[in-house]
Length: 472
Image 1: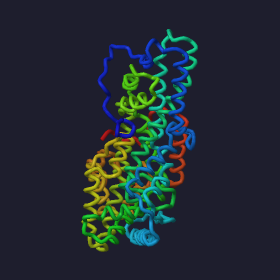
Image 2 (image 1 turned 90 degrees about the vertical axis):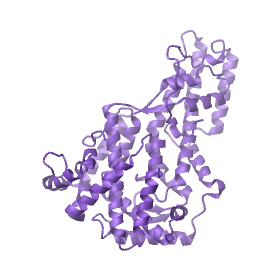
Image 3 (image 1 turned 60 degrees about the horizontal axis):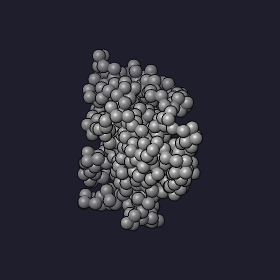
Image 4 (image 1 turned 180 degrees about the vertical axis):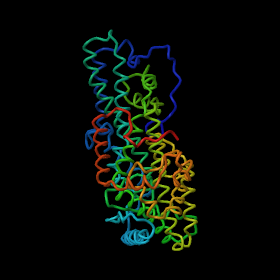
């Protein structure tokens, strides 16, 4: 079966001229009624051993199964030690000190009300609600397409009584698909939990509101080979976590903007039905295990080449880069002169990112998006220039309104954005004054309205008004 969660593989080469019958593997049409009924019972038994997707989730993906597999993944080989009281104390103290230092580096107030130290299993438990929002759009497309591919194989020559009995089969296949995708998602989240050092390591607001967290075991692993004291490593990572939480807590529209961009991009993923049909064509459907393996290998998801999808991609990629670039800029300025090995630690973060860190791995496997390190470097350069030209207040004022955020083009030409080139759509003093006079809570309400509208129109591709960026 595919190792890549959600099957982001290339579509298989099939014979497009040959009609596919997903039920053709049963021989003699659909076999006799007794054989078909027995097959339904075997499907039901197999789904029962995997867990019903409705047990703890109303969505298409079996999140109970995903959570169990993720937790099993992190505890195997003793890879998830419990957090000791001494470690918890050190993490809480580091996060509090980090917030004190950040008061001098940004105008945004502290965002952490509850500092915590998590084990890897606790990271899974605490971040799962956000992952549901991120992954369900893709899972829904997969589950429905699997059932549709099988249902489409019922021809007019199939007896009416068998057509009636195929309904439960298709429903069971959808349940099996939910369990299968849940299992793959669990493996992906478990692997991710082994790498992340904090709640914000992937650049998304995963933690509950007001919570900032470090993973002591991951902090130790991050410092291996750096020849930097663990206290200094912990404090540097605490600065990054606290900086992220200031953005997520005090930029009221950012949470909805980020998660909405992820959902818009994920919703534009298309399912290759021919791959699913080819996977089940010619199989013996009395063998549910063979069908499960074929479905997992035959699914191919690809981004739709539409203007809406390209805009969603640009918006997501640019926003993620801007968040990470701002955090890099603020943290490195604050750490300079306070942490002797700040430069070495910053380089370790960049190296980890360039070789495929948690954020890059997350979006490549769970959403099908490959983040480009070049965008992150350009965003960091833009924030540094803004700090030099406009100071801390002018730099942070950009977060007052989403329309002030740099676009993908601005990352390529930061000087025009910073200095307000009249031929550029970038920032100007007039823009800054006019837009920052609007109340942030009004903007947040607008974004929440967009989210509600998005939920009411599930399945429609589109981007929030004013949020789309030109293609990167």
